Image (tube, helix red, strand yellow):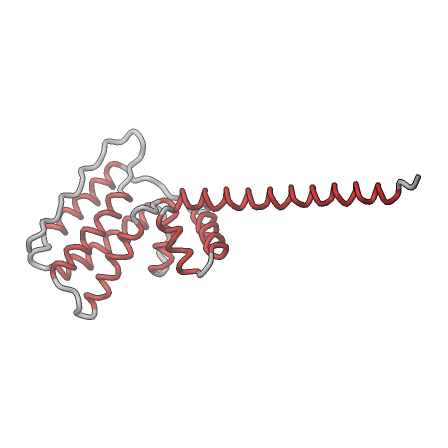
Length: 197
C-alpha cells in the first residue's frame, strides 16, 4: 500500500484550508479597519475615497492623519481662554451688519487662532482641514464650505447671504473647538447670526 500520494493529498488539502483561513482573516481585518475608519471619520471617509479614487489609498491617508494628529499635543482651553475667544467671537459677530466681508476674514482668523491655541499646526488649508477631521469629522465640512465662500468673496463673487452662511459655518467649527479643561466652568456660547442683514 502506497501512502505517499495520500500524504501529499492530505498535506495539499491542509495547505489549501490554511491558505483559505489566512485569506479570510486578512479580509476580516481589512473590513474591521474600514469599519473603524468609517465610524471615526463619518462623511470624511467618503470624501477621502472620492478624492483619492479608491478605498485603499483613502484609508492609508486617513490612517496617516490619525498618526500625525496623534503626535500633536492637542489641549483643551482654560476657562479664561475660552471666555476670551467667546468674547472676541461675540464682538466680531456684532460687526457683521456693518462689515460682512471683514467679519468673514476675521472669523477665519479667529478660528485659526483657536486652532493654534489648542495645538493644531497652521499649514495650508487642506492640512488644517485634514488635521481637524481626525478629532472633529462631523464639522470639518463646515470649515471647507466656509473657506470656499471666503475664497469666492476674495474674488468678489459672494453676496451678503453667502457671507452670513460662511460665518455660521465658521461658528460651527469654532463651537466644536471651544473645549475647555475638565473641571473649568463652561464658556458662554456664541450667539446666533440673524438671517437678515
